[in-house]
Amino acid sequence: WFLHVLSVQRLSMNFSRAFTSLCGAAKRFVSTTTNSLKDSTFKRPNLGEIMKEVNKAEKKRVSAGKKIDFVRPGDTVQVALTEKEYAGKTKIFKGICLGKHTKGYDSSILVRNHVASVGVERRIPLYAPFVESVKVLARGKHVRRAKLYYLRNRKARETTVQ
Image (cartoon, rainbow, N blue to C red; front, side):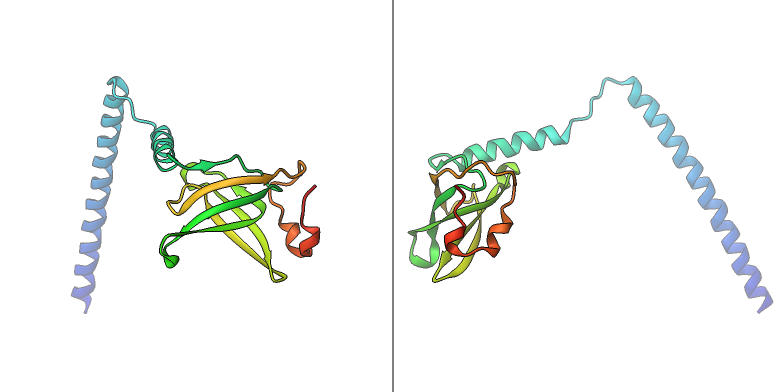
């Protein structure tokens, strides 16, 4: 048992020596490479700018042939959607815009409508292939909120923003 403990201690000492020498070599490698990179003319690409360009191109490609109006919270909106369940027929969803999420290609709006005195909300991605058009029927009064979630607690007659 005593010999076994000694061999384990020897192994752990050898491992710790090997690990410290490996860390020292890694530090030397990093310091030499960073110094050589500072001297060279290599410029790292800005990935944020690249993603902005890709997002803009994809947005332009998808929105070609679609009519998407500028929508603000409080506007009464009519959205034409193509649904696969109904053999590609166009379905109209009409309601008030409660909020807008703008993130380039992933932009979406939240539209609320009342059907048989039950509130129905739908988040609609603006640049999805099943969205044909987004049309503003009536502009709401300029509201001081970005998200009009307080309209959820109101009745159907009280939800118009004027």
